[in-house]
Image (cartoon, rainbow, N blue to C red; front, side, top):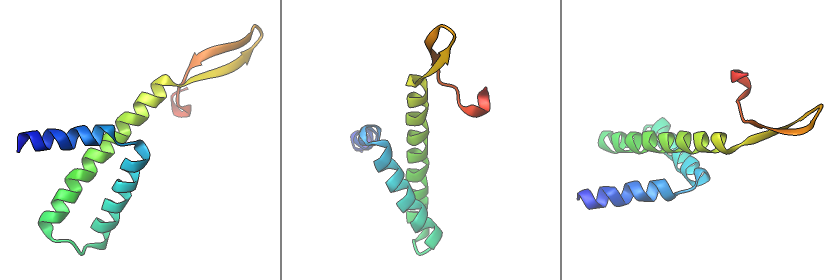
Length: 87
């Protein structure tokens, strides 16, 4: 069973951000509806937390890769991306 869990984790790492978000939205909808048995709700919640962490991680990776081009007196310069609330 440990190999099966590793396969699931590998699959989650390989899914796209968009796919993970769609699955997360589906899980939230099911949990908000409240028509799932308790054990299923717990499993969905755990999966949702993992997907949320995956999406957060993917966003952080993208933020580190983004460079902003800004115009200055000397022409265009590269500046590391910084979210608006950090400047």
